[in-house]
Length: 114
Image (cartoon, rainbow, N blue to C red; front, side, top):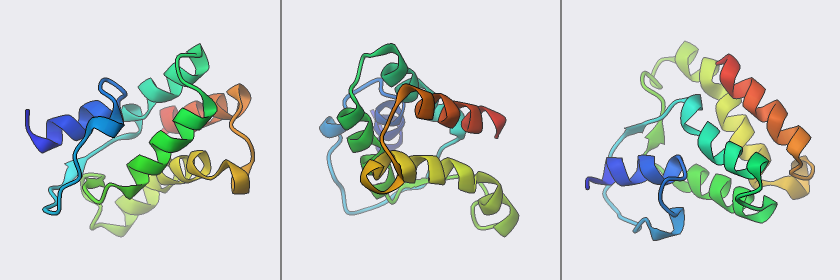
């Protein structure tokens, strides 16, 4: 399995993100808002806890490889900014408010609108 495949599987919650080895050589891994939905769904279904969702979001934000296709273009970056903001909010509930089912549903709506 390639690094890109591994990162995408972890991003979608198909494998544990903690099992993804850290590497020093980065490759661009293009993600889309829909890639985040499976893990948010796991929280809504009760499969993962608030803490696990927070840790996952923090992990996603720390992966230099994750970007959107065409991110060099300012209008593309601006369009996908809400996706990164959702991740930022989930990773910092002590700043942005607690992770709740209602909040996560709102995040799902934002992501689906992109």
